[in-house]
Length: 292
Image 1 (tube, helix red, strand yellow):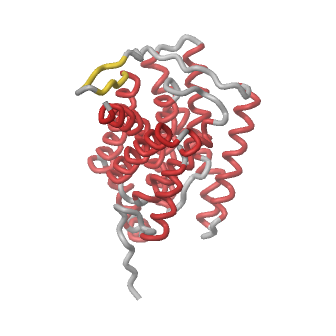
Image 2 (image 1 turned 60 degrees about the vertical axis):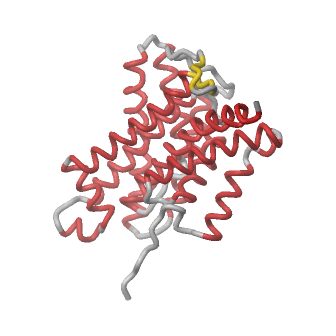
């Protein structure tokens, strides 16, 4: 019985952890091309979820709401890049850190004024009925998270490896200066990375909202955990964020069940502290080698 309970809690937590992995993957996309991170990524998740909910309330079918939400998230990502990142990168300053936070706060205030402060349920055609797999109950909603996360990450990786635009993305990631000498626009590539990151954030919001709720505070509940996953895994390992995200989700679920809900945040903070102290480049990260 105890083994089944542990298995149930671990699996449910691991599937939730895939949402953290997806948001962390958005961090990786922007860091790869510009060595910058959108610290307002959580607000992109939240605002895109509200926008998608609005589309649903207006009668948009699910198959239309999802791409609409992704396009809106991509637009928000482009706004962050243009308003808060580009000038700072051109001036070779770290101002993008503060600017991305400020833009995130602006999105937060806008969401409160447009949609209010109350949490709202997110309707979905996907059934919440459980499916028993080897004695563990998994809902179709939880399975949709796994499918959605792995699908979009797979599509982005396929895009990066099989298309000319994606290869430009990889070239700038590998060596920005060399890519520019070959005629590749680093500025446009950074724009692309922020657009993709925004779309990824939007999908995270669409996937997690039916399981939880949509509200202005959902960003703060997700962003620290996603950032912990990105740092612990390493900012250059897509496979790593999946592994660490699922592990963190499972540990959170078990800690909450056995130690109480007040300890739910402890595993993420512990992993983050250990990673920074023992392996700053991340468990799956590669140490940078600089020629002198």
